Image 1 (cartoon, rainbow, N blue to C red):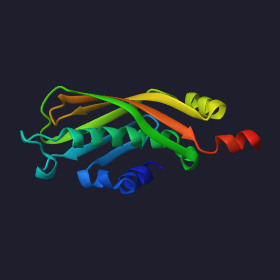
Image 2: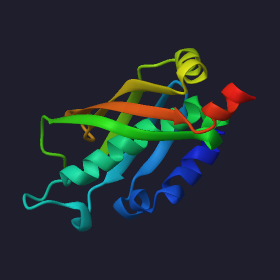
Image 3: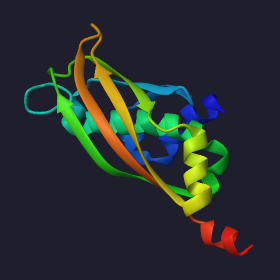
Image 4: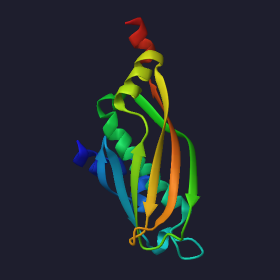
Length: 154
């Protein structure tokens, strides 16, 4: 499953491939990815553009989240409902990201099976090749089971 997510997630979201995000981990314990600096994703100060950093963070968290609820994905709609990013250092060179979703699968299942939706958080740390943190992102995700009403009736 992990290899499938690493291969297919960027293809499912064309913008991720365009930016150049590479996933290296996608399981229920965490997500990881990286992004190589190149002119197409630089800003006016020759560092990695904030939008590219956000895409790396969102994709990394999305990889972990996909693994966490993989068997339920066909009936779920998952979106970012809020995000906050703190930039701590210019992002130059290869940038790596690691994610941590705050909800467990059990917590998500309980909420989805009871109310049809769940909101939960996640954090992503972005670091340069020296291991220095360049940004930290906090996300809120909202997941909705599109088949919830049918399950209540059935």
